[in-house]
Picture 1 (cartoon, rainbow over the protein chains, first blue to last red):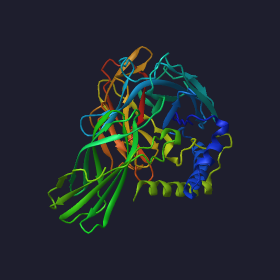
Picture 2: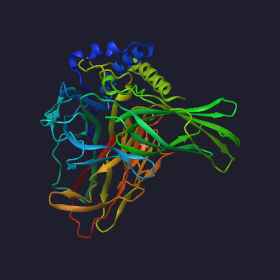
Picture 3: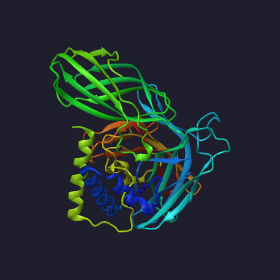
Picture 4: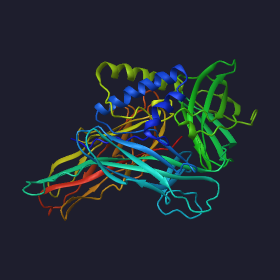
Length: 318
Length: 173
C-alpha cells in the first residue's frame, strides 16, 4: 500500500465558526449548491483514501495574528506530516511563466514572515481517519511597518515508517517510495491594504492552435494583486469565438505569456482580442480578496492562416 | 467553456457520483471558510511506487515513465489552475543500510497528462520540474516518473530503497 497523503486546511476561522461563515457567504444558488457538493466531496474523498488541502491560500490579519488549518488522514495507515514555513512567492521565470522560488534564508529586506510565524505542531503522526488542527501564530517584530508579508506553507506527508527488510534478501531488489509535498501560500497583512496592478505592454500572437497573450504586469498597491484575466476572442463582426479565464498573482512585477488553446480552427482574417483584469477570484476566501479597479484593453489581430497573426495593443480603456 | 462554468459542472457531476456510491464522514469540517467552490481543495495522491524489482549487478536497468512499473501520482484541484511540479531532492543513490546503489533520471523520465492514461502525456525533465495547468474540465493531472539504476559488478544483494517526493505548488496563476 502506498503512503496516501491528503491534507487540507481552513484558514483564518476557528472550526466552530466554519459552517456559519460558509452559509453567510453562500448566498447565491450556485454557491449553495457548491457548498452542499463540497460537503459531499470532502467526505467522499476521505472514503477514497486521499489526503486533501483546502483552500490553497492562507491569510492572517495583524489584529488576530493567527489562523488554523486542519490536516486529515482518511488513509488506513498512519501518516507522518511535517509543516514548515519557507519564504517565497511566484516570480517571473524569464520565459513568460512563473515559478514559486523558495528561499530559506531570505535577505532581511525581503517581506518575509516565515521567521516569525510559528507552526503548532510542526510534526505529527495522524492516525487513520483522524484530523489534526494546525495553528499558525504570528509574533511580528516590534515596530513592523504596515504592509504585506509573505511565506509559503509546505506540508510534507509520508506513510509512517515501517520496518524495511534488509536481511536475507536474495539478489538486488530496488524500489522507490512516493511521497508528496504540497505548498500553499500565506499572506500576513498589517494596516490598510489596497491592491492594484498596472498593465504595461500587451502583445498577442494568433497561431493555428493557440492565442499567445503577452502581458507586462506591475503591482502598484500595498499588497499582492490576486486577480484574474478574462480574455475574449472575437471576429470582426463582434461574434465571440472563445473565452478564457486565468488566475493571476502579481507580487512585484511579472512578464507573462498566457498560452490560450484554441478549440476551433480559425479562418484567415481580422480578429479582436479583449482583456479584462479584475479581482473576481471565487477560489479565495473573502478575507483574501482585495478588490481593485477593472482594467480593460483590446487589440486587433490579422491572422493569415498557417502564419501566425499578431498585434500590439494600445490601451483603449483603463 | 468558461472556467467557472466548468468548475460548476465538475462539482455537480462529482456530487451526483458521490451521492450515488459514497458516504461522508461526520467528523470532517465541511469546507474552506468562505471559499465558494471546491477549487480551494487540492488532493495529491501517490498511486504506485517506482519498482525496478530484481536487477542484475553490472547491468543498468531502466524503467521508462510509460512502464507499468513507473511511479505514478494523481492530483486533483481547481480546474485550469497553474501548478509547478518538482521532485524534491531526487536521490542519486538508493540505500540498504550503509550500502548504496546509483540511480539517475534522464531529461525525459517524467511525464504528465490530464487524465489517467499516458496516451497524450507530455514528458519533462524530473531534474528541473515543470509548470502546468490542471485539466480545465475536472482539475485532474497524472504524473509519472521512471529512472535508471546502475548497480556495479560488486553490488551486494539486498533491498535498496529511497523516497521520491513530488512537490506540488499552486502558483496562484
